[in-house]
Image (tube, rainbow, N blue to C red):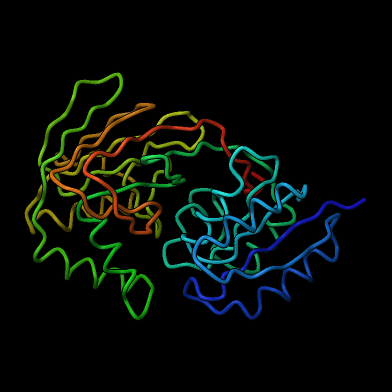
Length: 294
């Protein structure tokens, strides 16, 4: 008896048309030991329920077709199950897909959904809400909130939104209680908790982060001048941010962020309102994923 695979497609998310994905999936899975099914999301949070139902029904794999928000929703529904998450990246950042080494080419990504290997990675929680790549507050959260309202989504739109927000952004002061380390109190431009090394688009906020070490990397990027921006940007995209003197990082299994006030936080790039106190914890080996063969 063949194993079942479900593709969950968000018709509204991401930056690319999904018209060709279905036909490519049918073509690839026709020559595989799996039986392929399709379903579409129709409201926020629907992907999580569809994934939970698929896991309960014994599906071997669930494919998230969409952007980072869709991937996060599907992954939430598969936590602590035997069903593996597969991704066809069609978003603006594609953070988890990139962290897993998946190709951005849709045809190659589709092939991996059927032929890739199974791995198991950690998940992190921010006030019990799951994230798989990063949770950020400060400047990057403000940008995520503004970007979510942008009429066009893509790298150029994200860069333009970032520049616009930078001009008027005022850093905040944070108290960060980090298990195994002294409490840190600091003014910061960005504070992030990272399970994976990057936000998406190969912007590596935590170059040394690993999704399989049972730890979360806490990154503090302190205020810097406009003259420092080119160097920080270069280091961010070349996995060398830890070399910057404005950056501090710690590894831990638990941390608490205490902000000046409640406000927006991003979870895997999606803006969420949270209180001033945010508890971060790690769920080791929490979800099975499909990634390319080495």
